[in-house]
Amino acid sequence: MVAALGRWANGKARDTAYALGFFLLVIKEVFLFVRRRQVAFHVLVLQILFTGVEALGIVSLVALSIGAVIIVEGSTVLPRFGQTSLLHSILIVVITRELGPILTAFIIIARSGTAIATELGNMVVNHEVEAYIATGIDPIAYLVVPRVLGVTISVMALTIYFNFFGLAGSFIVAQLVHPVPFVEYFSSLLKTLQARDLISTVLKSFVFGVITSVVATFHGFTVSTSVTEIPRAAIRAVGRGFVLCFLADAVITLIYYL
Amino acid sequence: MAGREMAGAEMQEPRNEPVVALQDVRLTVGGFEALRGITVDFPAGKSSVIMGPSGCGKSTLLKVAAGLTPPDGGRVRFRGKDVFQMSERALLDLRRRSGFVFQDGALWENKTLFENLALPLQVHFANEPAAERSRRVVRALERGGLEESASERPAALSGGEKKIAAFLRALMTEPELLFMDEPTLSIDHAMTEKIRQIIHDLKARGRTIIAVTHDAQLTSTLADFLVVMDAGQVIAAGEFDEVKRSHNPRVRAILSEVLKDIASYDTDLLELLDGEPSP
Image (cartoon, rainbow over all chains, first blue to last red; front, side):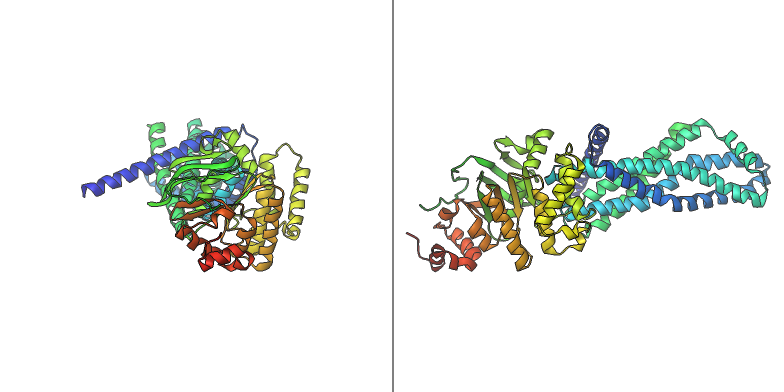
């Protein structure tokens, strides 16, 4: 049993070291990306289109719904405690600090995380990655870095978009409960919004974007020979992406607001 | 003169400066020893064929020799320089000067055929005008008879067309050295003839070719240098005419199995299969 435990621990340590090495290699290539004359710029643009632009619809829907739900819940609960004035603060805190970044990350993990892990896994099985190497193309520089940059940029942009639509959703529902002019509603909201909330949303979205993309590309490359490994890699990419984003969210919130 | 057999690490002295030299190369894959202390020099300007029974490590050896798979031990040298210790610039130069044709083509599925052929030029000839690069791609497609499929994705191509496309892609940078893994496997007769013609044209132009193949006719007409493998080891390596006269029973067994279909082309092989030694 001790030997088995030792082997398990050894394996975990090796896997962690491998993952850390992969992450550091990606960071190095990200810095080199802007300096080199890159054929991968085309890949970056396509990734932003797929991850960012094509997700606008679902992000809009989720954001509007969340904003509406929060205003409804707040409007029914807060008056019982005479705290109706806290409604906008709660909206800002919940949407911009928490739900905006984390729900956007979840949407992107589910859409792009699985797609990236699956696509790279297929490339490994079909020897396409070897073909890139044989051509003189570094797979990290060409396949990983554009995806990391594209997903991170998209998550950050979509998070800001989510925040806006979340607040817009709350406005729409607010008109049903207690109609307020648009300018007055958003002026009141913006007075509650602090710079630290914006910084928090940008920081979290950046970290979630990096986590989502690095985890997905890493697991895509863990596929070796069989196509049956590909769905497993995609599932691991999604699961670990969720867990790491939650952990990062907790750590950032603790550091930032305590 | 009979070719010298490989015993352990004994090595056939090449007559030419080797373009690729493997020294005591070892590789373990998934707990299995795929390559066991291989030492062999592939001569420049000649066509080398690696053959052996299935699972003996031929494709693995080819990928190690091409610098695609790092070995666990030993050295791989390209024109005297250690491939796995090269600088980024030197490695990029190596990739420009060599091409690799994968067994299943390994075309990039998310790109069109045109883009598959254009990408090597974008990497190695970025200073060339885009219009000129496009013209080179179009000319290559026309040579391969695939100009109508330029905007197709690889999934829309037949197996033979994919093989041809893989050749065209590997040749885009006009490499001096070409690695081929089973170039005529799993394709119809017409495409096989087309690919054999491409290979013989390359040979006629003095390119260095290192190929893994079970194609007896291709071996017989292509090979200047023959490497015979068994169970992760090289058991014979040398000039084709010398190795095929080997007295090593295992070498004879492997050669007769692979080359029996073309015995009619070669009276020496008829004698080999009949068990009679050549004079």
